[in-house]
Amino acid sequence: MQQFYHSLSEKDRRRYAAIEARKLGHGGIQYVCRLFECNYRTITHGLRELDDEHAFYQGNIRRSGGGRPSAFATYENLDTIFLQVVDAHTAGSPMDETVKWTNMTRQAIADAMRAAGVAISVTVVDQLLKKHHFRRRKAVKTRATGTNDQRAAQFENIATIRAKTIADGNPVLSMDGKQKSSVAPATAQGHCSRKQRLRSTTTISQHWRKVA
Image 1: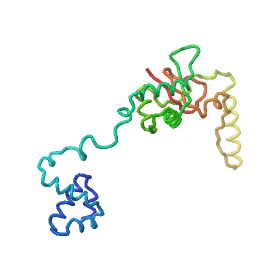
Image 2 (image 1 turned 60 degrees about the vertical axis):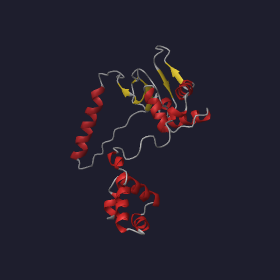
Image 3 (image 1 turned 60 degrees about the horizontal axis):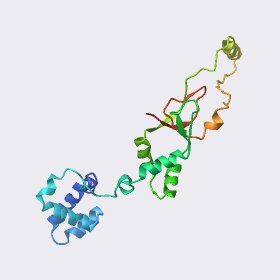
Image 4 (image 1 turned 90 degrees about the vertical axis):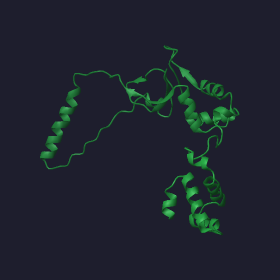
């Protein structure tokens, strides 16, 4: 019975508990409360719904209008403050005025807006970023650093050494090492917002990017 009770939705749980309490008669509410570990008001609410034929046609689990109001309804100037906060930490490309980015994280945006008198969570920040066309992006290597006629020589040398080592009965450990890019230190911890694709000769960290 308890397993079945906990498998139901919130609405069906209170109605099922109310049915069991009504079947038991006097003292049934207290007994069902202990059995299902539910609140007394939950069962009384269910009893009222059993006597209300319109409640059985309720599609939603909860009545509409419940819960805390949205931050967009609470703060009329929410979008304005958000854009002001982001603009204060925004840089752009000297070659293209439509390309802009910011190094602010979601938490940093929420903290800055809280300091401006708008207390919101990072969840609301996500909604604001989406509303103003900001997307989480990651720079992808799209430009080659160049070509070299002797590029294959290193791999041929490795293959020769590997074959000789195996022939001598020794183990071979393969490792891939890369030189640290001079671009990485400036971008490794940052976040960027752009309207255009971020092109780089190296793969760098994630950023915020603005798209049209």
